Length: 128
Image 1 (cartoon, helix red, strand yellow):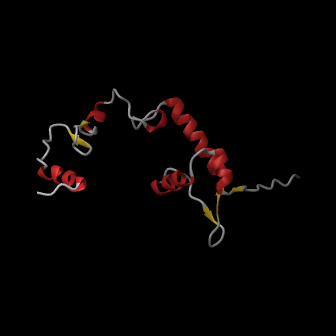
Image 2 (spheres, one colour):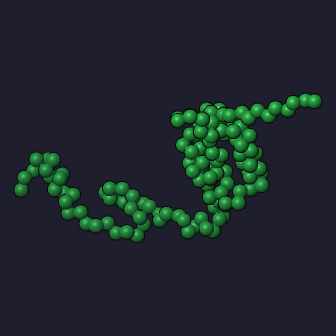
Image 3 (tube, one colour):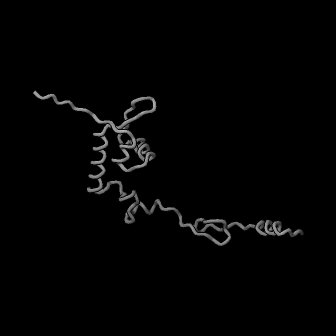
């Protein structure tokens, strides 16, 4: 008779990051969204992840990429350009006008700035 002892392996964050190349903040963001395995609390300030859950997460990610993503996002999370829904989420075109102080949405007229000349005269020491 053979005794089959199943030992769970727990991984700390640096070990998890070696397996899943995500930043600490991205891992915790995905946990909050329910898209990454939750850690097991070991102490007041110590957590670890079940290695089986992390391996399953990696298998799902690899399988998802092979099948194609269902959320319309491809590699790196960029929206597919041929996705018609992408067109509705675009920001208005920005362009810079000379002396405008920065980019302005296209079609928005600039307000007249009568005070532009006054500071230049004050710097030059010109008095009226």
